[in-house]
Amino acid sequence: MIPFASERMYRATLHHGAKGRVIYKVGAHEKLLERCSHALGSSGTLEPVDRLAILHAASQMAADGLRVLACARPTHDGHSRLEPDHVAGHLTFLGLFGLMDPPRPEAIRAAVEARGPSMISTRLVSCVASQAGQPAKQQTGLSALPRQPGHR
Image (cartoon, rainbow, N blue to C red; front, side, top):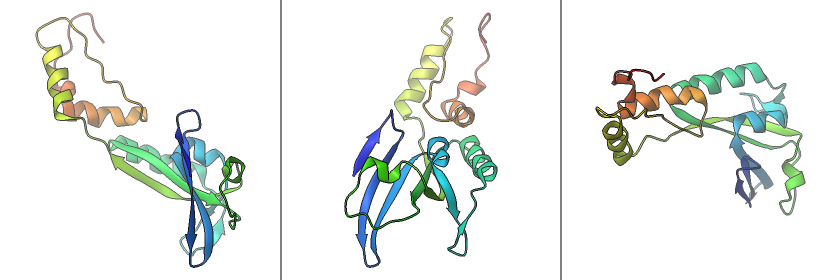
């Protein structure tokens, strides 16, 4: 396994199955998509990567408040061990998946209490796509609070 690291924005695993070995790479969809030369079509055949359609789908998922990741595999499998250069390029895009990462209840309470009647400007900081911020603001109640004078 190549563990996740923020400078790489992915993790990779080697699996042994009935049909041989396969490597899967999972990570930030923008970074992973840059390394894909093909996509796995619905019929199981390799097709050209439709980057615009994938980015649009990822944007829609993020707008729903999901943390979006992508999965790919090397176009040619069969490696007996996993090395970083095995997942550096020529990948086949397999798909997107979204993870729900709701704010913790104590974080919601702290954000609303900090905002209170004081002049503190509360900001939502997230490591996910910017579109994911709006649903999170709604979940915390921050979007319903009136703006304070002098703050954007």
